[in-house]
Length: 165
Image (cartoon, rainbow, N blue to C red; front, side, top):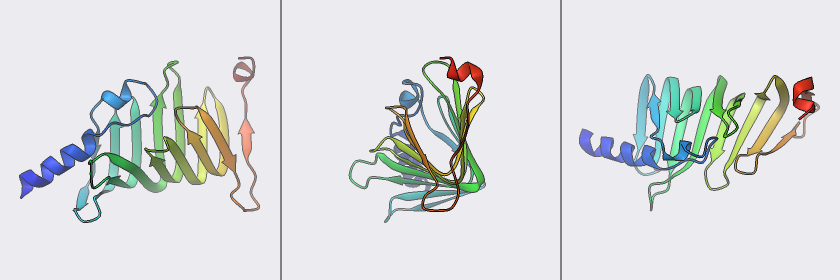
């Protein structure tokens, strides 16, 4: 039984991702946690306790991480990270580090979109965006930050070297 669970987990984690460096999707996914729960019916694996995910240049840290895969082909559909605060970082093809944090991270593979919700922050080159919600279309490098129907505002700090480019 342990071997079949290990095989399923290996198939689950071997599905490609499209984050950051174009070579990241060809790298294996490594996840470490204090515990893990596998639900075969819903095709979910839940990792709990000091969770770290690494794939190529991608790093995620969370208190809880849920990986959802397609029942038919086994590809990862979605990765959800939860914490106070869950963090991620990635190296871009240009060699810059993109860093983000929020209480909830949701990466939808088919849409190639990362959504950060609740105390969301995204930074690169000392420039920072803070908002209730930030949606980042990874392949297009497009970002939408909004207060998500709350009285909050979107706060942006652009450093001089970033504005001159």
